[in-house]
Structures are given as structure tokens and as C-alpha cells.
Amino acid sequence: MVRKPALHKPAARPKARGTPPGRNLRLAGVGSEAVERATGKGWDEWLRVLDRAGAKTMTHKEIAPAA
Image 1 (tube, rainbow, N blue to C red):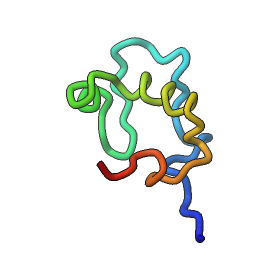
Image 2: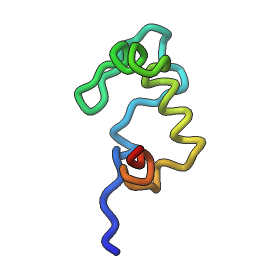
Image 3: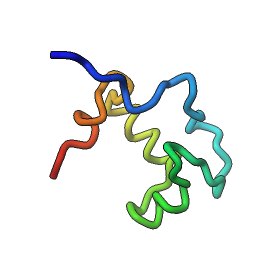
Image 4: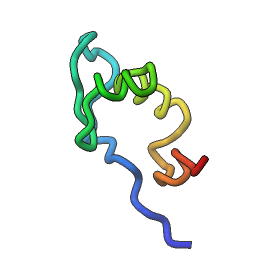
């Protein structure tokens, strides 16, 4: 099985810790405010959740499987 690159590169992504509240991060062209409206969580919260789940070593398909 060929492993696809991870969804994001850890070095290129902003750190979740220390991100000022209300800062509108943009990842993959999507702002934190839009993500929060759609999911109830902004990018800073999602990055913490994904880090705890080990997403740095997962493919996008493994992170967001089809429903």
C-alpha cells in the first residue's frame, strides 16, 4: 500500500498552544471562523484534538473517513 502524505506538515502548521483567542487561522484555505460555524470548534481546538489522536502520522482518509 502506498502511503499518501499527511494532511498537513507539522512544521508548516501554526501551533495551537498560545494561539490568541479569536485569531482567525487559515488552514487549507479555510478560516477558523468558518470551521467553528460548521463544527462548533475553531482550528486551534481541532489541531489539539488531531494532535492527541496522532493525526501527524495519519493520511487524510484515516483522519476523515467517509461517513
